[in-house]
Length: 112
Image (cartoon, rainbow, N blue to C red):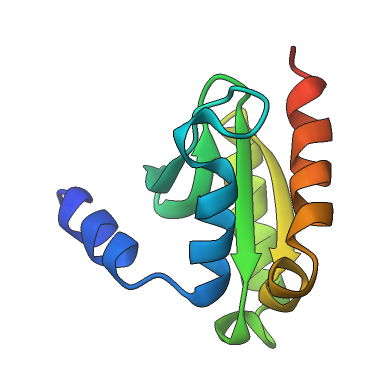
Protein backbone atom coordinates (compact mmCIF):
# COMPACT_ATOMS: atom_id res chain seq x y z
CA UNK A 1 0.00 0.00 0.00
CA UNK A 2 1.37 3.38 -1.00
CA UNK A 3 1.34 5.75 2.03
CA UNK A 4 1.90 8.93 -0.02
CA UNK A 5 -1.79 9.71 -0.77
CA UNK A 6 -2.65 9.37 2.93
CA UNK A 7 0.28 11.61 3.92
CA UNK A 8 -0.86 14.24 1.43
CA UNK A 9 -4.42 14.08 2.74
CA UNK A 10 -3.19 14.50 6.32
CA UNK A 11 -1.04 17.49 5.33
CA UNK A 12 -4.04 19.19 3.71
CA UNK A 13 -6.25 18.70 6.76
CA UNK A 14 -4.01 20.02 9.52
CA UNK A 15 -5.36 21.05 12.89
CA UNK A 16 -4.79 24.60 14.13
CA UNK A 17 -2.10 23.30 16.50
CA UNK A 18 -0.34 21.51 13.63
CA UNK A 19 -0.43 24.71 11.57
CA UNK A 20 1.08 26.66 14.46
CA UNK A 21 3.84 24.14 15.05
CA UNK A 22 4.57 23.88 11.32
CA UNK A 23 5.04 27.67 11.21
CA UNK A 24 7.70 27.25 13.92
CA UNK A 25 9.67 24.32 12.46
CA UNK A 26 9.30 24.67 8.68
CA UNK A 27 12.11 25.90 6.48
CA UNK A 28 14.83 25.01 9.01
CA UNK A 29 13.58 27.78 11.31
CA UNK A 30 14.29 25.83 14.46
CA UNK A 31 18.03 25.39 15.10
CA UNK A 32 18.61 24.82 11.37
CA UNK A 33 16.99 21.37 11.36
CA UNK A 34 14.66 20.25 8.57
CA UNK A 35 11.28 18.86 9.59
CA UNK A 36 8.76 17.03 7.45
CA UNK A 37 5.03 16.66 8.09
CA UNK A 38 3.00 13.46 8.19
CA UNK A 39 5.94 11.17 7.55
CA UNK A 40 5.19 7.45 7.12
CA UNK A 41 7.34 5.45 9.54
CA UNK A 42 6.59 1.77 9.92
CA UNK A 43 2.78 1.56 10.02
CA UNK A 44 2.21 5.07 11.40
CA UNK A 45 2.36 8.66 10.21
CA UNK A 46 4.54 10.85 12.41
CA UNK A 47 3.07 14.35 12.74
CA UNK A 48 6.49 16.00 12.41
CA UNK A 49 9.82 14.25 11.87
CA UNK A 50 13.38 15.45 11.70
CA UNK A 51 15.43 12.72 10.05
CA UNK A 52 18.82 14.26 10.84
CA UNK A 53 18.08 14.47 14.57
CA UNK A 54 15.99 11.26 14.60
CA UNK A 55 13.29 13.25 16.41
CA UNK A 56 9.53 12.96 16.06
CA UNK A 57 7.07 15.50 17.45
CA UNK A 58 3.54 14.23 17.98
CA UNK A 59 0.56 16.46 18.73
CA UNK A 60 -2.28 14.97 20.71
CA UNK A 61 -5.71 16.41 20.11
CA UNK A 62 -9.21 15.24 20.94
CA UNK A 63 -8.77 12.01 18.96
CA UNK A 64 -6.15 10.89 21.50
CA UNK A 65 -8.48 11.00 24.51
CA UNK A 66 -8.81 7.54 26.05
CA UNK A 67 -6.21 6.16 23.62
CA UNK A 68 -3.21 6.13 25.93
CA UNK A 69 -2.42 2.47 25.25
CA UNK A 70 -2.54 3.05 21.50
CA UNK A 71 -0.25 6.07 21.83
CA UNK A 72 2.18 4.09 24.00
CA UNK A 73 2.32 1.30 21.42
CA UNK A 74 2.80 3.85 18.64
CA UNK A 75 5.63 5.56 20.53
CA UNK A 76 7.27 2.20 21.15
CA UNK A 77 7.24 1.35 17.44
CA UNK A 78 8.65 4.77 16.52
CA UNK A 79 11.38 4.46 19.16
CA UNK A 80 12.28 0.98 17.90
CA UNK A 81 12.69 2.62 14.50
CA UNK A 82 15.42 4.76 16.06
CA UNK A 83 13.53 7.97 16.84
CA UNK A 84 13.03 9.95 20.02
CA UNK A 85 9.41 11.01 20.42
CA UNK A 86 8.17 14.24 21.99
CA UNK A 87 4.44 14.59 22.65
CA UNK A 88 2.47 17.77 23.22
CA UNK A 89 -1.25 18.24 23.50
CA UNK A 90 -2.83 20.70 21.09
CA UNK A 91 -3.78 23.10 23.88
CA UNK A 92 -0.14 23.47 24.95
CA UNK A 93 0.96 24.28 21.40
CA UNK A 94 -1.79 26.86 21.03
CA UNK A 95 -1.33 28.43 24.47
CA UNK A 96 2.47 28.50 24.64
CA UNK A 97 4.13 27.85 21.27
CA UNK A 98 7.33 29.54 22.41
CA UNK A 99 7.79 27.05 25.23
CA UNK A 100 7.08 24.15 22.87
CA UNK A 101 9.73 25.53 20.49
CA UNK A 102 12.21 25.76 23.39
CA UNK A 103 11.64 22.13 24.35
CA UNK A 104 12.01 20.92 20.76
CA UNK A 105 15.10 23.10 20.31
CA UNK A 106 16.67 21.59 23.42
CA UNK A 107 16.00 18.09 22.11
CA UNK A 108 17.56 19.03 18.76
CA UNK A 109 20.67 20.41 20.45
CA UNK A 110 21.20 17.06 22.16
CA UNK A 111 21.95 15.59 18.73
CA UNK A 112 24.29 18.37 17.58
